Length: 141
Image 1 (cartoon, rainbow, N blue to C red):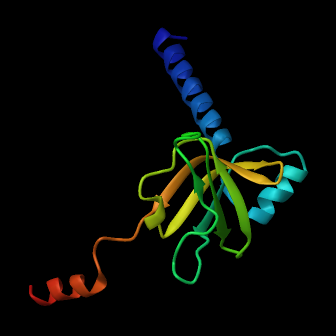
Image 2 (cartoon, rainbow, N blue to C red):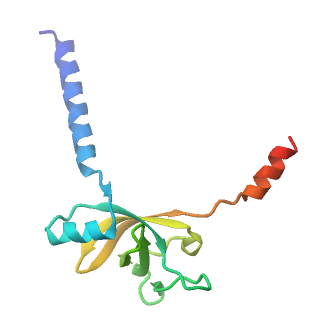
Image 3 (cartoon, rainbow, N blue to C red):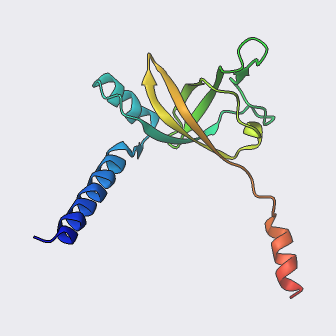
């Protein structure tokens, strides 16, 4: 066997190992109910949960607690998933900027002691473009 063939096989083997470790680390999208079931079964893998912030009738966020003077790396809030299940979430990092303006929140983490502990928070903020503005702009073209 030539050295170039051996090097080629090694490169392919390394690529396969990298792909397998990356795919094994990927988490899935679940509801809070499924995250709780996984935790009860002893499965501590990270999952994604999509939801909206719990708000009162006036549109104010309910259950959000962040006091950077006391602990800047402790942020809690209540998230309502797509099945309308409310769950308390703890995030051991500073509160994300524009958190209050987000329309939808995606959290990554797992259930621990009846609380969802998030490692990452992704926010979907409202678009700065309003449909009315887009229609006006396209009409003038």
